Amino acid sequence: MKNEIDYITGFRGILVIAVVFHHYSTNYPIFFTKPNFFWDLTNGGIFAVAFFFILSGYFLERGVNKFYVLGIKKWLIHKYLRLYPEFIVSILMLFLVLQFYPLPERTGNSWIDLLKEVPMLPYLSFHMEEAHWYLASLLCSFGSFAFLAQLRWHNKVATYWIALFLNIISFVLKECCISIWGVSFFISFVNKFVNISIFTGMLSYLSSKQIHFKILLFFYLTFLTVKLHIILFPIVFILLWLCLNNQYDKYLNIIKKILGNKFIVYIGGLSYMWYVMHQNVGYIVMQNLERYINYEMLPYITVCVTFTFCIFLQKVADVIRKNIYKRIKF
Image (cartoon, rainbow, N blue to C red):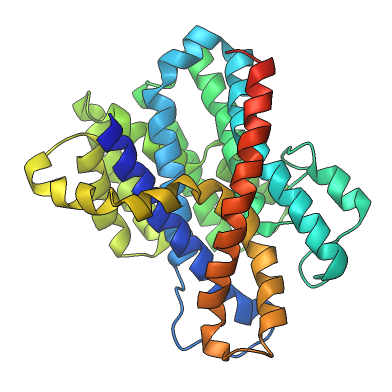
């Protein structure tokens, strides 16, 4: 079990580096009208976040028995509290930084803005740090999974056909640039509550049990590849699926060993904290360092700076989590 946790945590470490560098190398010049960097990671964020969702879906389905042990209410509270410590630490840190270095192009810095963030709720929070849209989708996905698990639909073939159908409609409407409010709401709903990557992750676990789910997984993989426009996506997905399902282990052990490297695993252990705090803080760091260092070095230096912040903030979040779990037993 430890080896499995190690290589999955290491994979998360690679994914978070891709997200962070995507924001610093690709988004920074776009958002602040700066010259493009010589080397960027244009699709890194899209690619990596899709796999974050897939891993979440896989472990949701694999751990469904815990849902039935805890019950829907305790399970949802548990999932919420798992995410909250890093979130609140990152928001408080960002709010403090914004008091000295405002970022009006990207976010507000008033007490009202902060109060909206504190509850960590979809449609209320997640505006001070743009990367937090991921949390909104994740929380909504927890809600939809709880609904499906409560009705015992989470492992029904029909559920996945319906989810795929809804996502195809949503994708077509979005590509057609239809901006009617009702249609926009439908697209937003599907993206959050019927998240195609989350469902792909759930299907990845179920596909080891029945041939029907393997066929479905093929359609999901095809749709996701079209949606993401990333040719490398299915290759990495297939390798991940083979690793997760312990197939062809003698050929894949080299991949598991690379991902299980101690330093990569260490980064993976900090991946959530780094993700939730890196974007706007990183942009502030870049704006303030720009006059002192070579422009092409900005993304690399900022990666190091925010990762260092991340190590300290994770320790604070761990203290908060420890105190929460002292008071709430699951």
